[in-house]
Length: 127
Image (cartoon, rainbow, N blue to C red; front, side):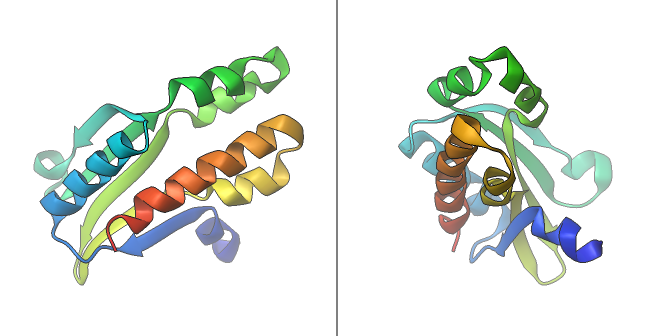
């Protein structure tokens, strides 16, 4: 079970500090034509360096929600990435959309495959 849960989330160790990692993610979001629609810094409340960045692409979102039978996907929107400082460095985590794309049939699964490519580029921007 623990193995399955770990597969649902992708993560990488950043080569950069917390602030630079956060800025690189936001810059890459913009370069890819997506928008940062929310940014939450939990550092002060939790006492550890931790932020969440929510991103969205209007065209992808419209396609995903176009058919009423696909609107359950709204529970997974917007895409989220966490940036968190660990004892050995800063990590970026996000949902493994490639895995979800494999289990979601039809056009929606294909769309999730495209989202997975964007997610991969975002995560790789901190390597």
